[in-house]
Image 1 (cartoon, one colour):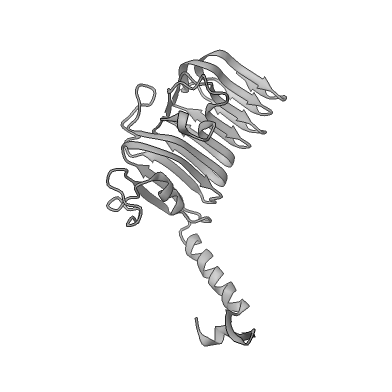
Image 2 (cartoon, helix red, strand yellow; image 1 turned 180 degrees about the vertical axis):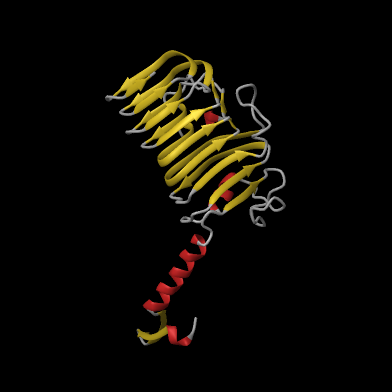
Length: 259
């Protein structure tokens, strides 16, 4: 910072140095421009529970983060980049939170997503829960399997809360949660989105749309033994899924389910 950009003040007899308004605005402009210069860019960030070290990571394939949350925390709050967080095989006992990020796209996905089929068996990446909150962008989770739901503080495996668009593909939830007081494998809250190409079984609720959401469960979403299949609470649900449940569709507070 140049001397011309600094003003010296007196406070209780001691000198106090502050940046001028013009300098502060210039610095903020440079920060914003740096991110928006990436317009249309794609950035890949890697996570490895076995190889990663959060304190040394830069997100590259050779220096991955150890946890999914650390990779999420490395994202800028405002950007126009498409971000892809690639997660290597492992069990991640994390309640991952993506909060307030505004970008073009963010996907959290298994590095083996193209090789594994969640409708046939557990994928090689397992996580406790993943939640997107107040994110103005396209968000998607791919190739992740539910694990350890009994020890999460959340009431869902994958949750989109006030998100522009949320998508769930090639994910699997089969740990029995029917004894839980309130649990849904997939949850859309004040969001638009879809679940497809995934497998959901033995859940209290397979998929919930609430708080004025618009959600779609496609024909490629399947599963058996659920207590409730699609639950629409003050929301609109388009259900063409192949879920088998004791209660196929539950509607509350004016919620609608179109089949």
